[in-house]
Amino acid sequence: MKREAVTVAFSGGKDSTAAALLLREQGHEVRALTMRLGLPGEGRKLARIGKLARVLAMPWQVVDLRAAFKANVLEYFISAYRRGLTPNPCVECNRHVKFGLLLRAMQERQSAGSLATGHYAAKIRVARRWFLREPVDRRKSQVYFLAMIDPAALARVVFPLAGLKVEQVRAKVSGLPLANRCESQDACFLPDGGLAEFLRSHLAGAFRPGDLLDAAGKKIGRHEGAIHFTVGQRRGTGFASGRRLYVIRRDIAADTVTLGDEKDLFSSALSAGNPLYWRVLQGGEKLVVKVRYEARGHEAEVTEATKCGIRAVFKEPVRAVTPGQLAVFYDGDVVVAAGEITGA
Image (cartoon, rainbow, N blue to C red; front, side, top):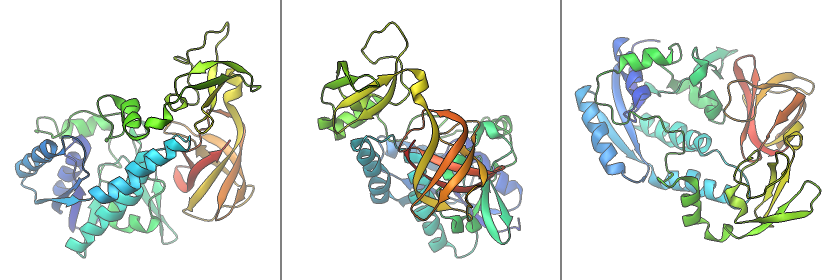
């Protein structure tokens, strides 16, 4: 990479800080942009990020993206749960906010240069087109969450951590006054009370009691709200049985939750809607599909690939293919398509 001005999407955590330090070591002029999203306690966090930027002697600005975050992430998340889906807000945030509006904000400030992020991801150019690729440290890979970004954006994006192990990243930022040392496993906007508290404050009507059903549709009990359950859940269903039962389906509109055996969780195929194609897919093509953020994917054959959706048949049945989550299609370690799971 030639020496140029690079703007880091700067959260003040381990990864974005390491990215900034690596770029400076490579001789780049490094600047930082931080997104204001309207999250609880954000003012205090921004003050810590500003302090860290001063320690690093790095020009720093805050970009107000509260309206876009609310429309594209929060409202999407709430709407998806209202429809009985299990959404992935990080995918939408990357797609519309970080690699959409933040990238545009960078371009408005400097016509040349790149936007760098602290994602564990890589990119590769094939036949004059950029593709997402798995990084060296696949344990921390975040490629799954990036699979729906505009492919054209990759021309202006760099991933400094692509070739590093997580241990190297942590060592590089050791001793610095990081703004955020924790690695949250939840969506950034969830309160301390977690998902249930967030949904209760936005979807009060969705917490209605309803029927527990067996796989044949027979009523076997009652629940306190279908929105509390996730596909694949075994504990906390409120139904005692002589065998292990799992949530295999939920219907928010009908207020029903269906329990079944573990075998009922497995699917032989999936459908994905609103697809993004990084390249053309061919019927009969054999690829690897990830149906959630997971270490390994599943071999599958594409049976249909149109502008409306993708259908694929798994080589072996896959557990808990969940509508609302993302299906990401790989050719080797390169992303070639993605879409929201609509059916299994």
